[in-house]
Amino acid sequence: MNLAPGSAAPTTKPVKMTATPRPILRGAVNFPVMLAPMVGLSHVSLRMAVREYLPQGAITMWPTEMLNSRRLPIERFDLVPEILRSPAETHMVPQILGNEEEPIRKSVARLEGEWGASGIDINMGCPVRKALSHNYGVSLMGDKGYAAEVVRMTVRHTSLPVSVKLRAGKGESGTQFLLEFAKGLVEAGAESLTLHPRSAEQKRRGKADWEQIRILRENVPCAVIGNGDVQTAEDALRMLSETGCDAVMVGRALTARPWMLWQLGEDLGSWAPPIGREGELAPRTSEEEGREYARFALRVLSLMQEFHPPREKAHWSEELLVRKFRFFLKNSAPWLYYGHDLEARASRATSLSHMRDIVSDFFYGPQAASQPMSARTDLRY
Ligand SMILES: Cc1cc2nc3c(=O)[nH]c(=O)nc-3n(C[C@H](O)[C@H](O)[C@H](O)COP(=O)(O)O)c2cc1C
Image (cartoon, rainbow, N blue to C red; front, side, top):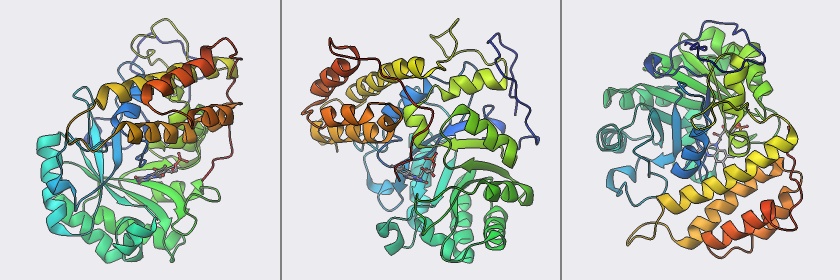
């Protein structure tokens, strides 16, 4: 992975990587940080708004929300909000939930052909009751042999790289279990693994145990992407250097601080600022970050209006979009000193344009105070 393409960006703190990075997406990825798949959040509008902070020349992969392989074969791709993508999006790796060959075969055929995926990710981390009752998501971690079989059946039906996102374990856990489980996936054809080192039972409670990322990286031959509790660019750099992982996947914090990508571009050395931000330095102080958050939140809102226009038979309504934006605020506003106030005001919005008035007034209205942002917050889940 080329971490410094030699462009003319200001370099603040060059960072040495500890291990030679292994290829992700068969070598297409050259930047070691990426957004995580998140239901209700990793939709086209958020992805496009986050992508605008990627340094020029940087290539990373992009997720979807998890998509059910039983529904994908029959869904209209242009009418389902979770499946929508922009033609401007590249290096898309949709995440599928599934455990049966026929639905997986049909799903990956459509994603590879019609939809234009660059890779396929298999969800082996979702701990919600519905996934458990259908025996997919993290349930697959309860059966090593079958989990490997799900990878094998996916690989059989696509020429794209297949990856798996997993947790530390379900019921059975411990390093030995994790390594045996992971080796089975790699033998079955998984080309990279993303580890969120919490057990199924922990859901998102407790602390992600990064040591498990290090152990996995040392013991499997493929790229390992570390995930869990990264809140700042410094955290991401620490995860890279402490665990030797090939890339870091960030979920909640990238919904709040997407310019972390820009900051990391500076920290890793010589990445140029994002398009349209030439000559600027990434926001760093809490005031600069607060100002950037206002701009970002309004951008997400604009993109939601652009990508989800009223459409006959579309599986979205104004009410659903308002709820989606509130969910975005619920996850991202906790980093703002007065984020609870913003969320309370947003709860009164009746349409996206009403939401825009509320958010603009909060940040720029006559009563607006400065909105500093904290480096860290108690992650709510
Ligand atoms: C609202 C929400 C929805 C999520 N949905 C998914 C999902 O669809 N697929 C998945 O693999 N993980 C999902 N996750 C887990 C994240 O991808 C990630 O592993 C977790 O949030 C830890 O990373 P973070 O501390 O950087 O947020 C979700 C997390 C959140 C907060």
